Amino acid sequence: MSFDRLAPHYERLESIIFGEDLQRIRCVNMETFLEAESILLLGDGDGRFLKALLDSGSTAKIIWVDSSKKMLKLAESLTKDLGHNVCFICSKIEDFDVPDSFVPDVIGAHFFLDCFSEDEILVILSRISGWSKEHTKLVVSDFSIPKKRGLTTFITKLLIWKMILFFRIFAGISAHELPKIGQLLSKMRYRCLKKETLRNGFICSWVWQL
Ligand SMILES: C[S@@+](CC[C@H](N)C(=O)[O-])C[C@H]1O[C@@H](n2cnc3c(N)ncnc32)[C@H](O)[C@@H]1O
Image (cartoon, rainbow, N blue to C red):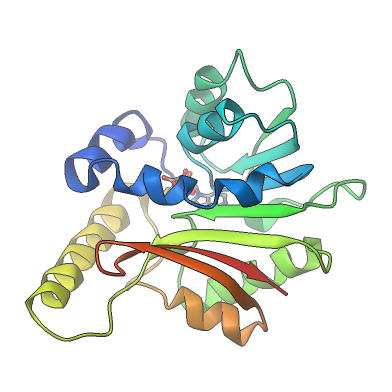
């Protein structure tokens, strides 16, 4: 899987389909991030969330991890005047381990888990659990298919299907369908502390804790 090819176009593609909504949902739980002294950002992409976090006044130690070199370059250049406390790491999450001295207060995963199959997500979640302490919060932003039936749900499913196909072709993601992230987190014994949604529940941000 590589987002290198898409990285320079990612923001534009996103804004054509979603306008500002994905960035709004990434930032909707900003308070949780601002309370943290140490933050781990997983698959964080082109740096727009990181910039918003630093612009909001975060002084936390931040470890930023993404497997795409191009995404890392974009994130570094977007935050070069702000990111004194940021350690950028180019690595697959599967190969990454947090340093022993680093206990994240908050772990952020915005539109990251939906790249994977449900079995892979369970493995990733058990890694995340291993890096977490009792107080650690996990903020996840992602898509969710609303339970209601009807035309809107049909259109939502069609859009999801097209997005997954697009990312399978151009980034090689392994997801074949939208993973049921909420259910997987509950299965791993995470408790949902907070949930915010946009577009009738299609775009979500959850705060979870073990
Ligand atoms: C769909 S993009 C989301 C980017 C960003 N978090 C956002 O909110 O738009 C998924 C990101 O996860 C990264 N990624 C994909 N697989 C990864 C892996 N195995 N380990 C770490 N990062 C990965 C990609 O390079 C990409 O930046």
